[in-house]
Length: 167
Image (cartoon, rainbow, N blue to C red; front, side):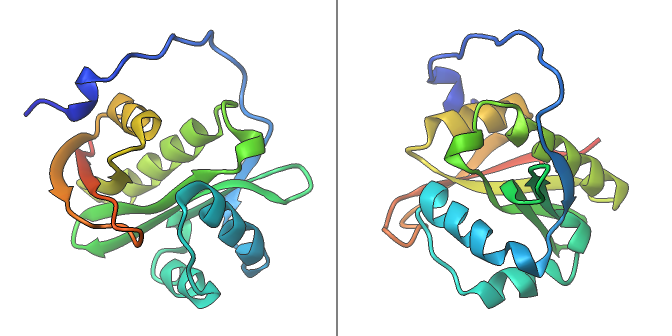
């Protein structure tokens, strides 16, 4: 199957850089306000704080936070495993002030490592059809579009479901 992102313009390769200026840790309740703010700004969605807490319970190691030295979240990846042998990136965003510093790659690398270590065989996610940069990012990680999700987002925008096998 041909991935829709193949027809998008490619990005210039950036020179290799050192690790991003954050460290990874698991989600903590004190992160709620900041993560909700990042979700609203980056993903254009708003959720009840209790949702983050309930989603983190079954697989706490799947809810990753990229924290500044002050422990303030700069980005996060909320991964869940609701289908047998499958990990799903449910939410994933980096605060606008921290983008283009390798934080997204740092989070995705660790999520895929943890999913594999958990014995999962596949990873899935959803992305807005209008989010060309995210589609390119996911394509670089081996994700391919497998379905069109009509009216998937709360504002009615369509989404793509993307998936990849885990080694």
